[in-house]
Length: 83
Image (cartoon, rainbow, N blue to C red; front, side, top):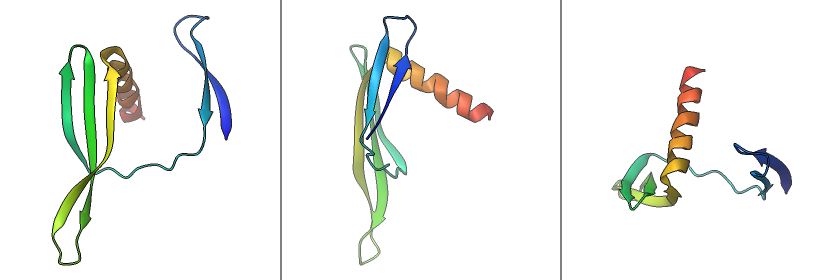
């Protein structure tokens, strides 16, 4: 398990993160993207194939976050695009 500190916008906004090495999920589709009362809901699926060749999408993650966290995610993704 690794540990590190992350600073937010203010000095008293420091959070210690504990990373227990959760394996990454493979995602092919966004299956839900909605906002209700300031909470953003995003669900992701991975495409798999049955033995008979039928494709299906299995939900692998559902995220719920405050809108300001979702905007932070958008800003960080935009930084990745600029690389």
